[in-house]
Image (cartoon, rainbow over the protein chains, first blue to last red):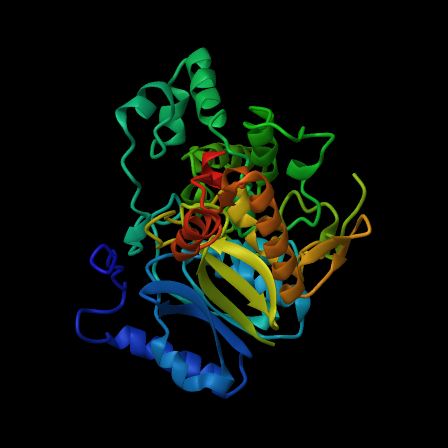
Length: 289
Length: 135
């Protein structure tokens, strides 16, 4: 088992020692915790040879020496929203890659986090439409097999390339992808900007229960519509999909429409979203549909 | 405020997916897939995603149940094991060892499954042993 373990290199560390950037980051976090600028800091730590999210606190300052940027990426901001929901007064520090930062902007817009209670340390990150250069090699797209390329959709193609298929071909390809769905709800569960207390995908009047795959393409299109103005193109949904449905491509298309119609590029700033009709007072408590 | 991430292995089937338990102030509140785990590489099925629910479920049995006077009632492990042993012995004596079958589980360890088949073959004396993953 030991030999099979994949090495997860650190963006900041070189073999045999820490780089100055990593040390600076650790010192900054220690200072924040020590001076009560933040009550806790969400970063990564190696546990049993796996880079795992970890909550660093003032009570255990020495542990901050083990803080790493982490090659694997988790939605730390989603963890932050859970902590903030329980204890709104807590000041949270967060290790933020670009995708985390974009998610934070959306969470500020929708009042799921208070920007006054959040401090971030920014690290360089994964390639995306919004940033070309990235150090997060973990997110280098996996190669897609020839069968999927032939009858399904290559996960790494751009929206434009996907639109070049004829309408019928495109429909068949998407249906092939959707009917693989196991209805695991992983895409929703892992999504940093999915925070509704009541989810349409679990509403029995909209989505029938008791069969796999779920009703296609409705199941995926309902989620796609809800991603308009929300999706920050982090790719966590596609990462966690057990059957490799090209979800990121689908949501990119939805957000392209949002950009065309409203001129709103999701996640780029914490200004109001064109979809936030209720203004600052919106609460997302359970309400009857 | 105490927030912890605890790595573990999914107990639902024999695959052994890596999971992370989210523990908030000592209470298990969520499950995440472990992204660097060799088996599942950051993916989970719906059972794995909801792994924490059966741990904290109100419906979870916390002690053995024994049917007395037609109703299931909570009992001690000593009484439950003694009753089971007595009944098994009686059945084997009356109908022979092949009247008993044992179903092992993917949710327990290899060692426990080994013990289950050893018990079936050596103590009960039958080859009627199978596994839930074959059902």
